[in-house]
Image (cartoon, rainbow, N blue to C red; front, top):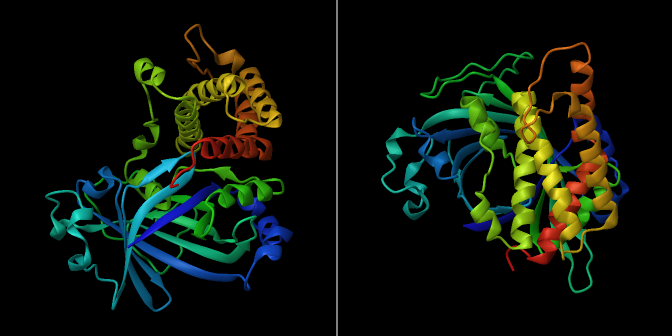
Length: 366
């Protein structure tokens, strides 16, 4: 068993080549980058018992090697993820339930009921980096993953655009065939977790790296139950009042990131009211915080809120941020403008800087 500490970031496909050629990666790399194809098959019960407990069970096919992996719930704050992980080499692609630690599984789960629920197929480029520090060097593995999460099991043939791969059916309802994987992961191998943020911030000056909360496993489960993407993290006013500044910042970041990614996945403009509400709460908090929020970050938040309010203005009703969108000639153009804002490099840097400010105020895992 090992503890995994990583920072997950999304990246537009148009920026792949720019990331690959970043001088910073060449400066810190310890060996030549590697590229390999990875296929993963995820398992759960018909009732998705593992997923309800935030547990992921998969078999990875890497060349001729088969690796069974179990990951537990762990914790996530502002984009930095920590969780327990077990790995076992297998002789074939058959799941071996005898290897699974009982204390890491939900109580009473039926091991015999595990079945394939979805698969992922992507190309991974890996950099092994060593970032110098004042007290110690930090070893980081940076990976660029590009491919698909696919409803169903493995298939050797690539699906045509808009179609899903064939495979065993599951008890869950499949309503969407596949979801793009386009992300960067920075995993701590040794050293200071804060260097994950510092490296990401340096890279974000050149490429639009945005914090993401959606794992590859979650992409697969969203294919099975798309409406789960609509479930945003909520707090009552009473619970919210009990939070420290740091805790409130982490909650608002989680809420806002979730709202953005829900809108992008479901393509439902109604979710934009939640996106705007999240950004306006972040803006208000950033000006009042005793945390060290850079002036440039505060300005970026203010600019984002102003731009979103301007484009959503015609649709805002009397109720706070409630949207009633009616089709008109300008609607598609406005949606494109809003999507451009949400995918902008300045906004990505802003969210990353806010996350780092929260981490610095109350470091995770120390």
